[in-house]
Length: 405
Image (tube, rainbow, N blue to C red; front, side):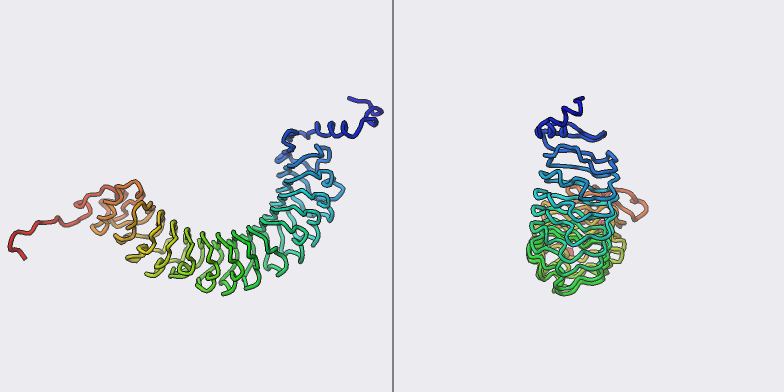
């Protein structure tokens, strides 16, 4: 060890070298990659003697309860990624990020933040991703995001937000996760995000959607509305989403599924309506329009007992159809008319009689499978695949003789 007198005489470059060599216990420091990974090391204070040239600093799963300016966050001016997830943070002091001009990703998930000062993010001019999920935020202060003008990905999932201030979101956001909050309504003008491509509103309390709720989301490609409390869908609400490709409606209070919203979504390629406890009927026009639809997931709907004839005939690009774990006993023969279609039919109470002969024959194809008989008792548990016409109770065909009418 160097004497204190000699240490005071070392040039700055040497001090930097010594600092770069220090790595707290249970941390992994890589000076070649300019990364320090202390995730799970249970640090109870912000480390101040790491390599000052670090680009990635990972501190998830520790005991850092507060973040103050004097914790020397400003010492790591080259940081591009900072992870402070799951530390029990209760407070972010103003100025904590004043010198983090190169930071592109900030993770603050799983802490105990209940409020944020309007300018707490000041200094983060290059920030692209911000994760505030799993905190206790009830609202966002006006102007919070104005100091991060390049932000593209914002995760606010699993908080207690009940409303969104009109000026709290940036128009250039591309990804926004508002799932598992307490939003009770979404009105026109709440989300003026013309560049947004991914939006999740899952797990909120949206009994209904305002007709103009998505009016300013013309670039949206993925929309998650699972477990949002929806009881009805209106085409006018979805009409502005001409670019939408994926729509998730799982776990809602829908009783019937009609032609909305499919007919107003010309580019939709994936639709999931699964886990809806009240869904009991698919209307004949439910899939009357869907020129781009490739994947249709209708699973785990315990009251869904039937599929109408011709339901999927107008889906020429359909490649994957899942009807698993519903209450289906029967399926029309035209349900799976498209070539190269992969269909999942397992965990339904199929009635194996002659009406399912077509399925027994089609199920020999590897693209079909999972269907097993629930009735009659003699066939219970038998795979539909390979059942003979005789086992299905089909009357034998008889060739007519000449003159027979």
